[in-house]
Image 1: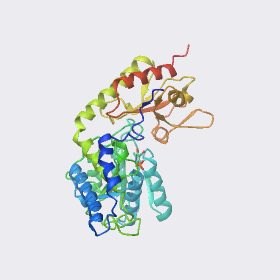
Image 2: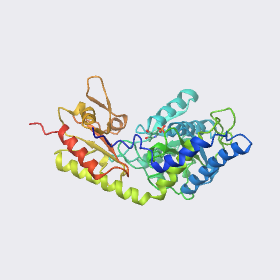
Image 3: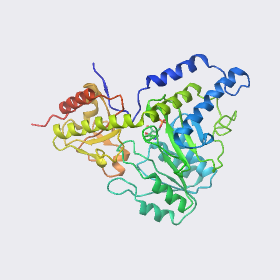
Image 4: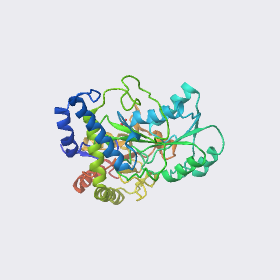
Length: 380
Ligand code: PLP
């Protein structure tokens, strides 16, 4: 049966060019990068070339890239080191963050007594900058952890404005950029930020690899100790083929960024227009259909329907993979923590996220629209 994949915010398929870059490394470059002989040095050279490639694409120094097992580890590393090494006694974050940030912040509070504060969001889901400034204007040294684009509703926060506020109040700023890295350009030579998080599998790289960008002015220490790899910041023999794949995916993404963006925007528009045409009463959470939202994500709120609670399952049976809030045992959608915390959850209406990549075709969108129309057939 035909399978249409519209869950690219969860993960993306590996690009063939990335697989091509990884395969010879996986097969032939077996040296331990820490070994001093030629076989080891060959592996080490690949890691450092990958680091330089990534740094060049982002406009930062290679030494600010710390390879990790992906976004979750990078988020954990940022929050932990901000508290343990940079002296942050308070974390300002949001209930709409990814669970990697929410859980890390809670852990910092339990382990080290760090104060946790949530910044308010405006009605359009953007961060209330006036509230952020009010919070920052008093209190202890603070880490602000706010994601660039939300993985569920696609709202994009203004990194430059948040960075400016953090600078004015001497706060440390971390942003989870997992959904925008590889899709939006970054110029870290002009944007002042302390930490950024990247995960390769969100832009056609391999799973289980990513990095934390940490501004070199901040002296942080290792959280995983052992052999002292990554200049002592993260011990453990490096995921060599993963790192090479990550760099290949970054090069591929940034080398084609305009063409990819143009295609994905047109695909997303086709989906949004098609839904408006076929499903009376459909709407889009947090205006996720707007140009200013993350162009890979469309979060759709369907009108009340008897199939609401089973919509994901029924679409899967029709051959369409997308995602939504977690389903509780009765089969009704319980909603996601993001939709709940920002006031978009409606128990009567199913919310589903469709997310696209440059591999998504118009035919696939039309197939998905037929499937959605079947599942949400107007109730007679
Ligand atoms: N942060 C965001 C915004 C994400 O969407 C994800 C992945 O779902 C992560 C962090 C976690 O990344 P990883 O899967 O590489 O651990």
